[in-house]
Picture: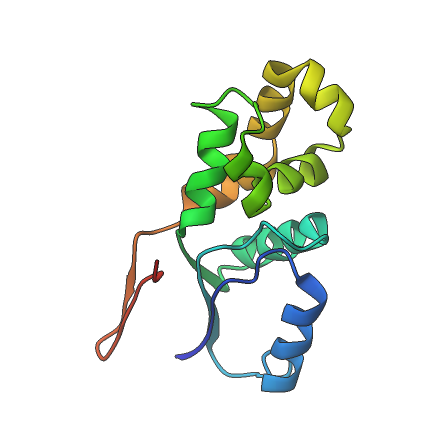
Amino acid sequence: MKYYVVSDIHGFYSEFRSALTASGFFEDTGPHKLVVLGDLFDRGHEAEELQDFILERLERDEVILVRGNHEDLFVDLVTTDGGVAYKHHKHNGTYDTALQLTGITPAEAFVRCFAFAEAAQETPYYQRIIPAMRDYFETPNYVFVHGW
């Protein structure tokens, strides 16, 4: 099994896809998997495209996901913080990711923060991708974790 390991994509889908193409990921005909070491989203503006790509890889059993601190930030925003965009959610890009994935405007999210949080909890990112994440991934020779 060949592993393609990436970390901290942060929603920059185009750059991520270019790197996979350059590494031969898409042309590889042998058994291979993509290992993502956390921080899928927050900062880039291609959250929906990246979400779709990861969902497709999950369906094909072609990806191993390791949870990072930005996944924790998203969960905090939509659960503990009830959709309220505190400074750290805006600074880290978590709020923008939730806006992208829900299609809710900043004004509506501000006025109806609980509805915003509920909509974010309905996203595939929250319902399928984050639950599929592990704390680490281990092979006979390596242990992969997200570095904080």
